[in-house]
Image (cartoon, rainbow, N blue to C red; front, side, top):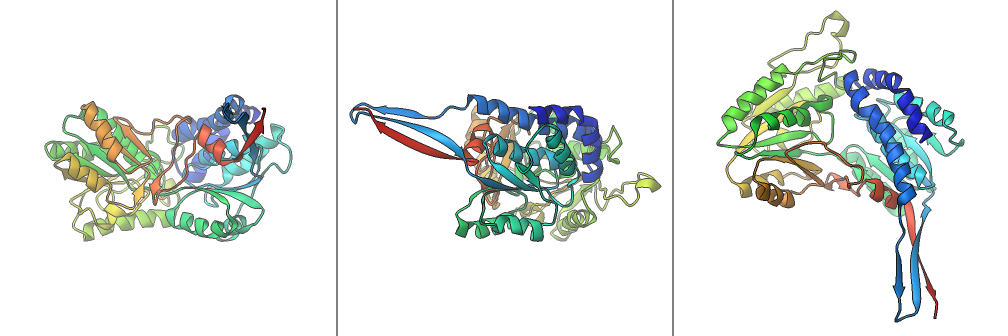
Length: 415
């Protein structure tokens, strides 16, 4: 709790550092990233006080059984660059509250707030050696961490190729592994949806944090009866989005994380044109002009693309930027099959007014989380994680404590 209080106390300083380091608007860092980091510590501290073990009486055997939980040991925690402090603390908090020691490797691209967290934890009175943060690259620091025989747990959030490598390396050691990986998330818009409300959600789900969120919607399936109208309004909405530097309080989108990542995202827009798609707004059509001070920044406009086949590169690969591909559909059965056709299965979002249809479709979608008429409403008490190439394991107050502990059954005969 003291760590959470100190994060709150240093909100403005942490938000500025996160924004300048990662590229996101400071308003988002102040409203989302840093408050969530504090919430992570509070939520797991509170849950641990009320977590219950299991027990069972077998009268016919004259025996009583109960469970206990113990720490696993040393946990290796590897976090990504898109939500740096937010996701790092989502791993540190349950690992520590479970009684483990941790070695953390934040992304080398956005490690400033992890470095600041070191001082906060020390000021909060955390003993030396309990939480250790190592700064370095994946091939060096990360590789050493996952290969170390004394690290019994690996929790990783990041790309699917790296997650696959970690799983291969960890297997001979029988390490416990949790992987939250990439996504190619579908949004489905049925004809009876409230378009105004849906567009407000879609703006967030496609372009929040410059689209650099694993949960962002990158494939949008819209019923053919409303497709033209919806596409026209979505393009107008995308054009209205303000892109600005980190300290622009009115900006909705900031800079992408690096020059290399910006070029990757722009390359996928070029792929879309090569594959027969139509770019309605954004990259190739609009430029970002923020003045001479920011001319070297890694900015791009929100980009809306249509006319792509389901097996085209922009429809199957994770782009991780402010790009959404929009396509029409006809029937419920068709859109479920198309939404499930990619190798990922992290999340999906569905909009409409027919409750029975919404819940029926949610059951059929191959995704760890499905939002109905909303996006990114998260309770830390609910499991979070992916299916297929989007990862393995779940994270929540209960699931994370399960992961970071070993459960033991003790049975005693009383007759």
